Length: 94
Image (tube, rainbow, N blue to C red; front, side, top):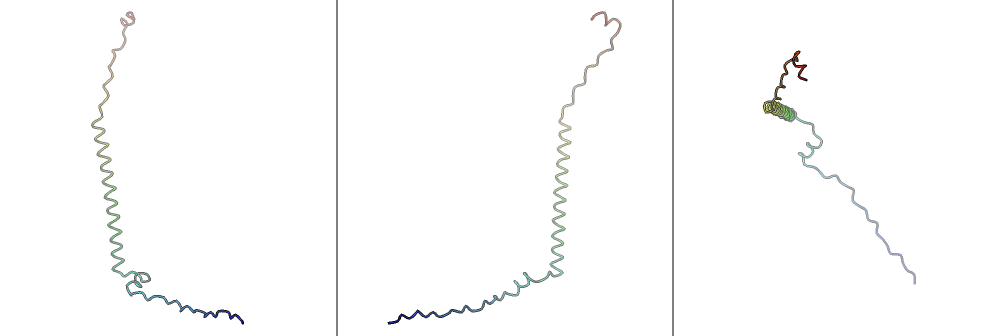
C-alpha cells in the first residue's frame, strides 16, 4: 500500500488594490492650496506675529515698571558727615 502525499492546493492571493480615497482626502494629501487658503494662512501668520510682538512689548513694559518701582523704593544712602578741615589748633588736641 502506497501512501499518497497530501495534495496541497496552491493559494493565490488576490492582487492588492489601493483603496479609493474620497475626493476630499485626495485634495488634502495631494492637492495644492487655493488662493483663499494661502490668504488665510498668511493672515494666521500675521496674527501670530502680532500676538508675539504684543506679548514681548508687554513683558518689556512690565520689566521697565518693575525697575522703576525698585528705584523708587530703594532707600537712598545717608549723606556722609562732613568733617571740618583741620586747623592749627586741632593738631594740638591730638
